[in-house]
Image (cartoon, rainbow, N blue to C red; front, side):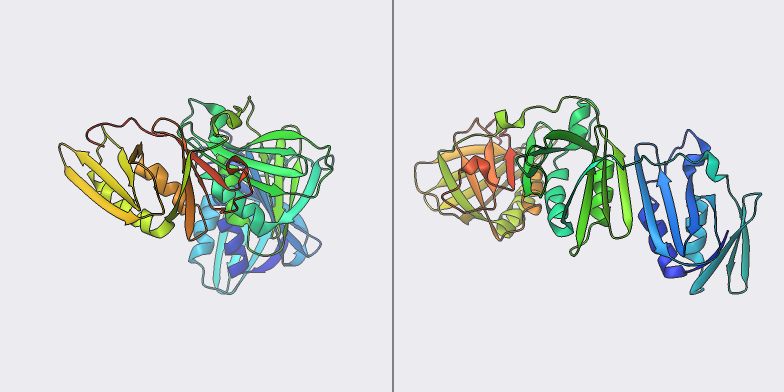
Length: 376
């Protein structure tokens, strides 16, 4: 194998792949990346056996072939090189010469034969979608996914296909995020797919604001192709909970909240929460929302903002970090908070369409209330 590629392009490819490579590889080859040169195209692949990524790039191919190189060491070396172009030459003994201007390095690799093959997607169901739309729905749901392994199925984003719609859900049991996307697919196509968080995070990094992405669906795998890259992931196994049971079908009242102002106030008052009491009390009175937090070992914080609330005094408590995370994953200047009482979940949406049922809006966020105490 022998080829020349621009330093900038190679660096970009290696940056894309760095998080895919197994950090603590039980099989030595998984610490390597596969480099294939064929038909004036360079293909670089990484996998940890759960998530795999294949990137394509133009290169000047003088001799076709393939090898694998240690990803970390190779990436560190390329990062240090200043030459605009880099030449790679691999021999049958899996030793690769890396030439950059007057600099010359030899890096020991392993045979392509030992590298795990990525799954064949030839029989997959597929649909195309705008990259920015897919990026939006993944961004607005992935943050709510559980980081704890105690409930395995909640450690991924759930994608449900049905009625020509893709519904994405992330939840950790304390908050929930749901976003929907119309797709061009056979209306009879139905299925549920739990995508590991690591795969979703890599998809988000790879998706841009222009062009289309192709989504491939198989019984135990999912793949997204965009920007000359393909991310393939095994699906998590298990039964995802019926989240519709925790989404209230109606609310007693709705309040419009200025997103950035509320984030600022929550950030201030959250300084007065403690590990033992992480609640902020939301008190609604005529035309005003007051936020209060109190911890005996810290002190007390009170802030307020004008809101379009009319009615009797209403109190509810929320975890400020969870509430702020939802607000940061909204895009509009204002959000709508729907509430029923102090003990039932709150619903946050961006849509102000009065004709659309509240629980059908997208994106939609649900946050569980905390117990009201004298300190909250």
